[in-house]
Amino acid sequence: MDKINFNKMNEKQAKSLGIILLVVAIIFVGGYLIIQTYGSLSNFFSSIFGKIGLGAPDAETTSATATVASSDMQSSNPNSPFSPNLYNNNPDASTLDFATLQSLCTQIYNSVGFFSNTPDSALAAIRNCQNQIDVSNLSIQFNNQYSRDLYDYMSGNFTNTQGVEIMAQIITYVKNLPAS
Image (tube, rainbow, N blue to C red; front, side):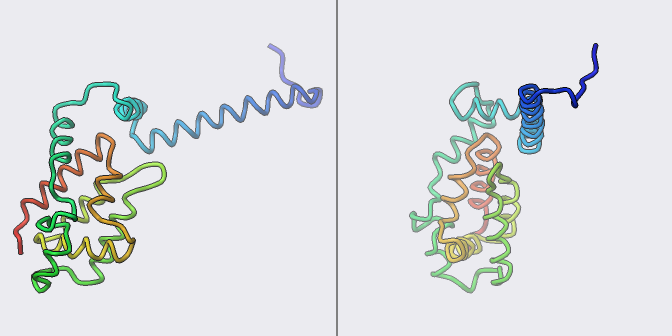
């Protein structure tokens, strides 16, 4: 095999080599981002196939999807812990101070990313709530900080398999909290 003599390359050969190196770099960077985001290529393809309706979900995912789909936790429901009504009717029962609320809202907001979401970070933030009035207070603060509905923000962004499963955990956790 002959060595490549870069000094004797013509312009066309140099461009071809440059394109090949660029494609190889894109493949490596893309692969790295996929593995960082999804954990493995298998998870990536499972997520892609799941989003377009191919591939069978497992029992846990099916159960989580049913939990999220049947939830009545939307803030438009006045009895929902994500509704401002709960806090507004009993503000003294909230255990979270303003600085904590701001921090938790930021944590939840940042759990949605450009390339990937980290719904487990949102779940960790929600677990700081000691009662359903805390959740209501958090929802109000989230809306004040980001002009977005907290429940809709999470359920609308946590749509892949992991996200739906964690959204179901959030719903279950909040339902099991004491009212005040």
